[in-house]
Image (cartoon, rainbow, N blue to C red; front, side):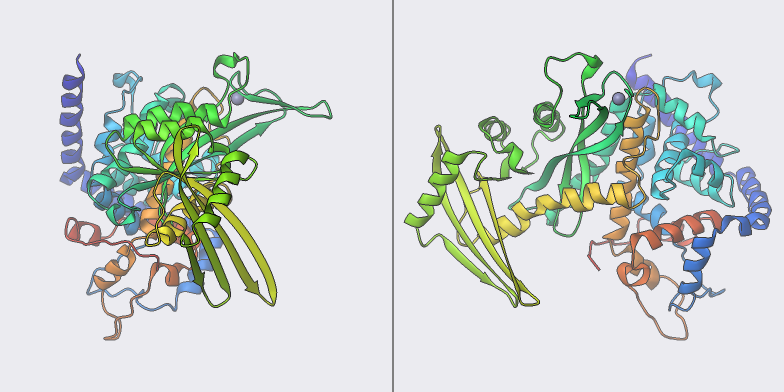
Length: 519
Ligand SMILES: [Zn+2]
C-alpha cells in the first residue's frame, strides 16, 4: 500500500475512533468507570500530595462553587497541548510507521506514546511507578482523552516498552522537532528571537555510565587505575530564550556505531553530523548558533557561513591564541568601541573589534569584564566571544545579554532540569535496542509541554473563567501559586487521577488567548 493510502486509512480510522469516543455508549461506560473509581480515589492520593494539598487549601480562588465551572490543575495540560499544537500531536504520532501486526494490536500508537509522555510529565522516574499509577482513578479516561483512543484499559508499561524496542527512533525525534516547528509556524516564538533569528544553543551532555559494556556502541574510557567505564552521551540543540525556554530541536547520539572505530566518536564529530540534520530540518529559518569554547575553530566558522547561520561562540585565549591576541591589540586601536554598563552593585566594561583577519576569514571579537561587589567582596569575571554578527554600540548589549550569555540556558534550563528535577535523564528507561533513545525523545516532549505551561499565562486565564469567590477575584501567577514546578507536577498528577478534565477544557477550546510571561 502506498503512503498516501496508508495515511488516508489512518485518518479515516482516527475519525471513526473520535466518533466512537464521543458516542453515548462510551460516555455511559466512562460514567460507570467514574463511579467505580470514586471508591478508589483515596488510594490515589499519596502522602506527598496530601501534604502539598493541605498547605494549599487556604489559597484564594480555589474553593468549589457548585454554580460555576471550576478548573483543575490537569486542565492546564489538556488545554496547552490542544492550544499550542492545534490538535496535531495525535495526527503526527499516527504518521509514524507502526511495525506491529495491526490485527494483533490492542493499543493505538497514540495511546502508547502518550503513556510514555505522561511517565515523564508526571516525573514517575520508572516504568514500575507508571504501572502503579495507570489503573488509579480517572487516569485511563484522561489518557484516552489525550490520545483520542478508546481502549478498555491503560496499557501495561511492558507493552509500551516492547513497541519502543522495535519502532523507528528517528520518527520520534521528528515528532519532537515537528512540535517546535508548529510553534514557529504559528508565530508563537516570534518575540523570542534575536535580531530576527532563533537562538539555538548546542552542547553535549552525559547520559549513562556503566562499569561493564552496555552495548557495542558504548564510548569506552580507560582510567589510570586500570578500570574501564562505558558511557553514552548526547549532543543537543535547544532553542533558547531569555524568558527561560530550552526546547530540544535536534539530538545526535555520541556513540561508536557498530562498535567499529579508529578514533572514538566525540562531541565535535557529532556536531558535524548534526549540522547537516539541522540544516535539513530548518532550511530557510534564520538561526543564530550559541556554542562553547570547544567549537571556536575554522571548521565551525565555515559551516555556519555555508548554512547562512549567525554564531556567537565563546573564545578562550588558548583555543586560538593568534586570533585572541590580534583582537585584543585591535581593541586598543579603537577606543570608541567600548561600552560601560553600570548597575547598583556591578559594572561591566565591553570592548569589541570588527573584521579581524583569521586565515582569510573576517571575524568579530567581543570582550567583557564584569565587576560585581557582594557583601564587600569584589569578583571580576572576564568573557570573550567570536561572532559573525557585526558588533556596534547600539547592539552590543543585546549581543551579549540576549546572545552570548543565553548559551547557559542549555545547561541550566536544559540539562540540569532534566537531570535533577525528577525527569531522570540519566536513568536508563529501556534496556534493549533503541528503546532508550525513544524515551529520551519523549522526555524532551514532556519537558517542552511543561515549559509551555510554566511560561504561559494560561493559569491566570483559567482563573478568570472560574467562579468568583466572595465577590472578590484574586488572580495568582503560576509562580506565586505553585512556587515550584515540582509542586505543580504533583498537583497536576493528583488531579489527573482524581478528576476528569473539567468542562472548561471544552468550553474554552479555540476561544482563549495565551501569552508567555515569566511570572
Ligand atoms: Zn552502550
